[in-house]
Length: 305
Image (cartoon, rainbow, N blue to C red; front, top):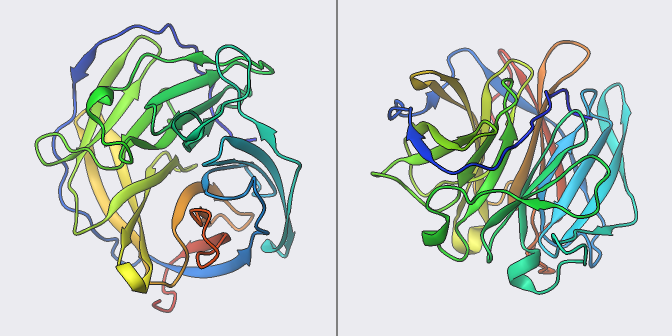
């Protein structure tokens, strides 16, 4: 599965502000993306609301979480590295610290996941805002100490993006919560939470997924709702350092309705050395919305979207 260092968490509290507000995101000069594939994912009770995605280093195997409290393994058939079919395994219920399956909207609303190389799984939930951690092979998760400001998150605006950094720390980003007008990027290093960076919000876009790429950069998936026209999606590429976010560029921005409600993001490198952006959409359990697997390739000199 993903090529990431393990993370041992001693659940200590505390928040230390480290990051400064980043410059506004701008289109990366000389870098564009091309659409590789757009595949439908069969709609079932378990695949309603796909919200989190992790992929293996070669993009052929992965893990999904969905809003109704399910986790699903996925296999992606590729021909010349182009996705041609998806096979989703029988779903498994996410469990609570008591070992029982999660039930009820407030408990089951899984919105983001991160998977360490040793099999440790982190899942963030809305409704009852929390992050649970499953040790490798464990049935019962352990609750992490709450992310900063979790008690004040809106019901549908908590942690929407999780990612494991090259340093092994867990990064968490809320959807609809700003600190002094900026999007906070929180970091848990095994001892407690710190503020790793503050990102400048742009327009009506809000965070919906994140991943660290093999280049060490943070890739942030955002979406904007345009009413009857559907959703717009955007992917930002961010360099994080001791001073917070030092670079912030836009790699992809789609028009209204180009894709579904993209919420899960996995970033990996193909055999040719190009960065791939693989995403899944949340249909919100509605027949009129799409369940999709969407993949872009970051290239130079590609045709515009």
